[in-house]
Image (cartoon, rainbow, N blue to C red; front, side):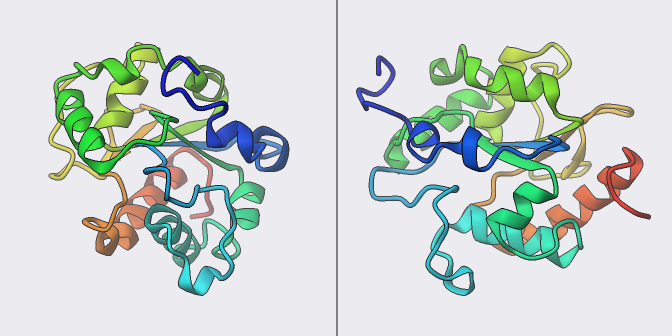
Length: 202
C-alpha cells in the first residue's frame, strides 16, 4: 500500500466487512489507529475476554455491557447491537508517530488523515457516530461538513457528549491505558446520547 507499504491493512486481513459488519449499522465508532505491528487488532477475538490485552476493546465492550447497550462484552454482541469500529488511520504505527500525528490533529493539520476515504460509507450510513479522540476528529472533519473542524478540549465538559444540539456526533477522548478508568463514564454519557436519538431504551 502507498500509505504504509503493507500488503493489506488489518481491516482487510480480518475481513471486517464480511464477518463483523452489523445487519443494521446503528453506531459507527471511529478510533485512532490499530497500534504497532506487535499489537492485536480490535476485530481479532481474544483467547479470553476476561484477560483481553487490547485496551480500547476491553474498555469499550465492558462499558457498553455495563450500561446494557450490548448483551455481553464480546465482539459478537457488539456487532449484533449494531456497532462498527474502525480507525482514522488504518496503518500500524509506533506510539511516537501516533503521538506526533495526534498533536497535529488537535489543530486539524494531520496529513495522515487528509483523505480518509475508508470512513465515508459508514459515516454516511450510521445513525450516530462516536468520534473517539483528536485523530478521529480530524479525520471525520475532513470527510463531512456535519462535523465542523473546530478546536475542542475533549477532556473537559461538555465532553464526552454531543458536539452540538441535534447533532448525531458524540465525541470523547480515545480509550487507551491513560483513559481506561473513564470508560464507564464515557459509556454512561453515550447511553444518554443514544436515548435522545432513540437508539436505546429509556
